Image: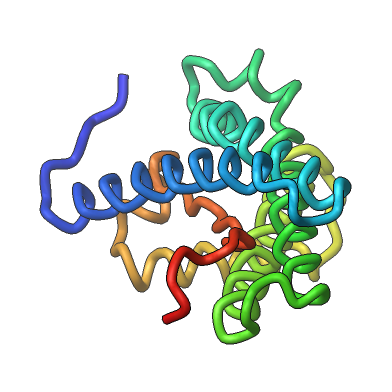
Length: 174
């Protein structure tokens, strides 16, 4: 179905993506059980951990010719999940649950991914998409092409995963 690349950069990207996915799910479970934060933040973090794996599978399957038509009906799940991650990291930043040195870059990264995913979703489902959304999608794809070369321009396997803000009490003072 998909030609699996064997170069080191692509395999490293796949390994880092798998690590981020596991990190998001496990950290969301730990944060949701902490009970020290507000209940809305805990519920939002639990939703992030619950939806990230299925949403990533939907985002990987939606552009494929084999699975694209039935999965395209639920392709909105990926931008919605990225929106949850953006809200979670924004709440962690605004409430001071995580140091701004950590949470500000995570929030900026999640916000950029959210905007790019909304642009991609709207350009694939809306025939008359505004030029601003087309520009955002072109800019995101161009950056992926610069970083990961030509396969990033056409491969559905190049999926950037969001980061969860680690609003969990530290074990050590350091």
